Length: 105
Image (cartoon, rainbow, N blue to C red):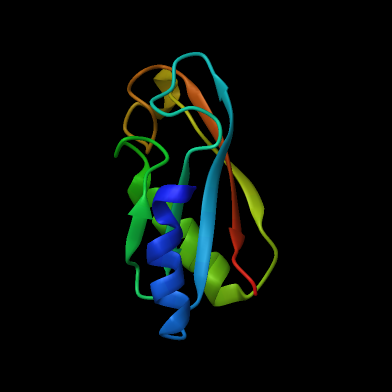
């Protein structure tokens, strides 16, 4: 989380809404460890990474929806199965669970 603090501070100083996604659990193989974080501002700017790129676009979409809704955070999961071969997921074969929440001061 430390690597995204400067960007969050800059965005908040500019009056932008921000959501933060954190890896909370990995099942099987995963690209980032629990605790990895990514911040997204209302303009879609991103700081940090939760998956090394394989699901970042979907996480940005979820974060923007949370910012727009003004609602509470939510848990989301991304993984891979034969049924989801063309869906957003992890090519490494694991599943990551993220908690995405609006950042409030």
